[in-house]
Length: 88
Image (cartoon, rainbow, N blue to C red):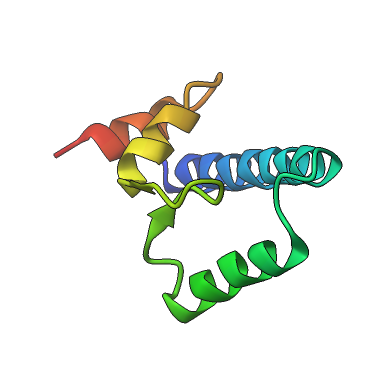
């Protein structure tokens, strides 16, 4: 398994998540779904928890981190990361 390939795939996953969050944040703002105070509190809680909890910002629903990751890596050229994460 190529360490460099996995690192590059993690970088792509992070970029995908950043862009997805940016887009979702824009739409939440545009549609007045969240206040600045709610967004700040959500971010502050993440910092306090060292980002150890995976929570939906709109409803507070907890998720399992690996489930979220696995649902996001179904894009081309992610085989090494998929295999690494599925190898138990």
